[in-house]
Length: 498
Image 1 (cartoon, rainbow, N blue to C red):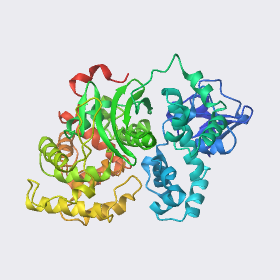
Image 2 (cartoon, rainbow, N blue to C red):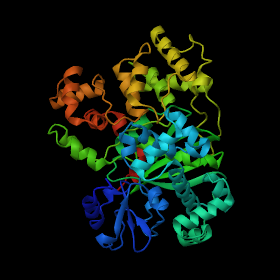
Image 3 (cartoon, rainbow, N blue to C red):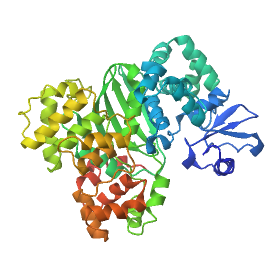
Image 4 (cartoon, rainbow, N blue to C red):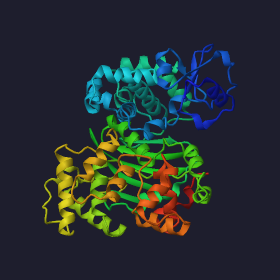
């Protein structure tokens, strides 16, 4: 979008927050860069230039605006709506892969050479993988500086910097302030020391956001010991590269309150990324809803509760296992089966607040599963053990960087994987915004009530008008049924976003 100067200028002059994260405005006369909704008086058109990423602005020598804080804007929705190599690279960079594995590790995961990845990112984003990772480190550092009382040396290494010197230089260059000055400027009073490893922060999103189906779905399907709904917050355990974590996510006005307890602060970047992915916070609900409203049968559902997101997962392999366990049984029964796996094979963890007891077992732990142990029909036990074997030996990858169509083909080749299971995984684990569930019972009931075609083939043909947002259409169709996944638990009434 940054190449459409006229459109960008209109967005800046109208201070349109819908475009925050889509592009950034660099002001030639001041040397700063802003988000489109920056509250200051817009600069003259001749003094504006536009970039596709904060990293490109920083690489061109611009520093972040202190008023609108463009580095904290929601991420571009493009990276969640595409499956090409650039989008997959951006999702991996967002997960901190460059910090942990370097550019060669990033390229290896994508199946390209480092030079090819560098060239593709430069062409589309104006910055290479190292610059993009640096911009993310700076954003994480700012978050820690402003919201915690951690010593600066701990902030530096938690944000992914190799040395305190590099941390100091980067913060000064990006924000035109020393780390200590940045903390002093942001503080409204002394920062209260948190419990060791606990960080409280806000996750921004593009309005509107309807929390009902998002948190309702997560709460209704929560696996005991791994997930819970407590005091208006969804809580769950996280398996992370350097340790484990526990997160509490609470819907609030204009943001999601996030409280993270980590055994190792180096996992902060990935933990934040997984939480944003889980809640689909980088979506563009205005564009999605506007498209779905063009269908007169969907328009009333959209108008009744705009801003619905697709509830995702923090781990693709975990969701795939849970999807198989939930085939053709009730939500409650699926939770029971999953809880048994967790108790038998999950890693025990300590929850500072109590209530959560285990990490969901990974494929390697589940590879030790006795094929006859699960209380499932024989064919479904075969489906489960075949899936686990494919995940454990690496022949099947369900990470956020995977190619959606290739993963669909690999899943479909496994025994017991029909269209519903494949598309459910595509929707919630892979994040494909166009995944569709025409055989789902709730979708078929909604279709019947709304006057849509009832058979899966006819409904699929009819859904072509909703592309590329059919996963969001499913969220609206599900609201036709009065199911717990559509409602926040009763104790959350005081936590609804304005």
